[in-house]
Image 1 (cartoon, rainbow, N blue to C red):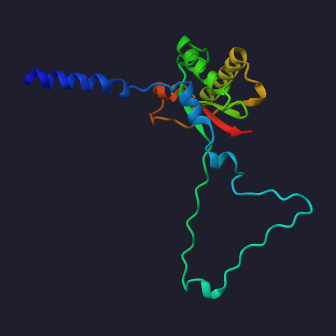
Image 2 (image 1 turned 90 degrees about the horizontal axis):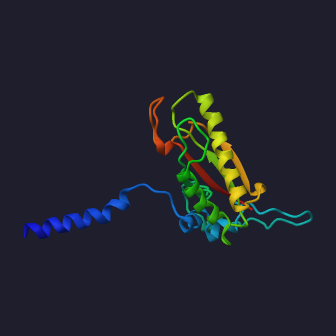
Image 3 (image 1 turned 30 degrees about the horizontal axis):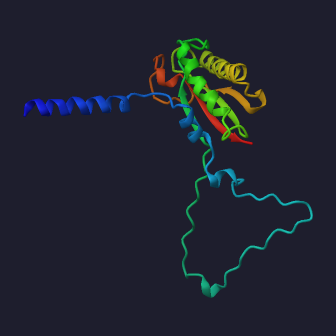
Length: 197
């Protein structure tokens, strides 16, 4: 009886282990994270451009009898967020050189960006750092890391430079809050944001 409980516990741990480990998404998962949903891809955030000479449609008027005596103001609608993905790109601390594991991660991203589902879209690559070092040095390093990712995607996958914008935010937007001068791998990441066509 005890042996069967032990076997069941080991089996559960074996299946739970990979789910708990943090890993980067594969190409198919990246496509799903970065492609706009049907509603977002066809809208312009609620603004319809009017061509010269076109008369805007009149606003609907409700009769006073149809309106309730006291109406609460409508809650503001949250703006849809752009599809994005966070990748842990392994850079050595203080470096913008791509490691072999970083290249393996970016190979998945390159496959996603060159897929039929994403070739029509442009992307922003945002570099991040941990809190090790000064804020100014981290800002420069995050920009170098974003540039390194952009260069890799251009050279290996032929992604047009016009489709990619590289920028860095240094330690300003930490994924994991840490005190100053704390090396944290999860903060040394690259964020990919779909910025439309």
